[in-house]
Image (tube, rainbow, N blue to C red; front, side):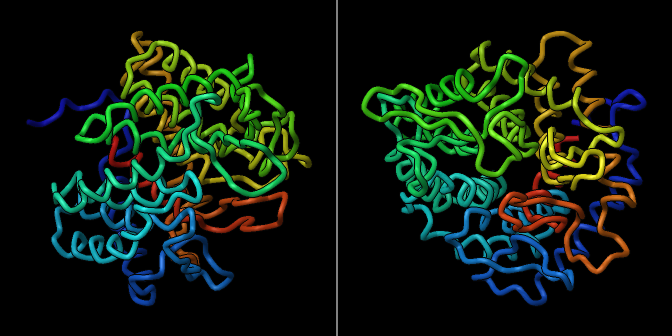
Length: 373
């Protein structure tokens, strides 16, 4: 059944969406000419080509995800076959228990593949990966542990909200039903501890695993412990909204709106955030197109859940504003050496890593946002 046309201004012009889809095909074709099945795009090198990483890298699932999203948009068996080959190299990650990123690796690859193909082998991988992620849950803290490195006792990062989808989905699709309560608990605890009263977010919260008490709140990739890392804020917009979809918990919807309002209200004129909302050197600080793309995808879903028409329109318009900017000459990689879709992403600014480059997860959420339109 055809969907009704969106009112003027509440969607991107169809010719632009078509051009962006064709551009994505061209860029992904370039990448496929030199990336082997065991190489997964992460960030671009100075010559514009992708730096390929192994399946163990936290971002390894996004390239396969881009291929699946393109297969979905085009209906092409060719793209589906390419996506399947890239996805297969990630299979070993279903048993990885060393960090929370098993969700990023598996959900965006096997999860997208299962959505499109219904392959029962993909279903099994998703359940195994959820079991692996569930081993990192601690009932005293009420969260899954993010990292096993660093000075913290039990670190939980705002990014971890994104990996809860693997647990939610698996619990509702043949897996252990207790995974639902684990993910729900994590989302609520993260809302309680990561989100500040003004709707901004901390990046890292460290817990005492023996008591569940908070030991410290701060940042690892942001500018300062009291500042707001832009991609972390975007993870919160998307992650809390997604958690509401799986739970129907009004507290999570309220939290999603609070973090979304902060994100939108603190954007610069062109709708693409600086890498940190309080970054030094504003307005000349680096932008992060990946944070913009993640937030746009989250805002589009949030607009479908909010009960009032004014909020539905407000969040959708905010997403459209961001996507129009990302599709402009200022951020789209068309006509540049980059083999990606988006320019001007920032990975880990304090460490001096991946500053003003293209990032595969930015491309993934840009494609997902376009598909949500």
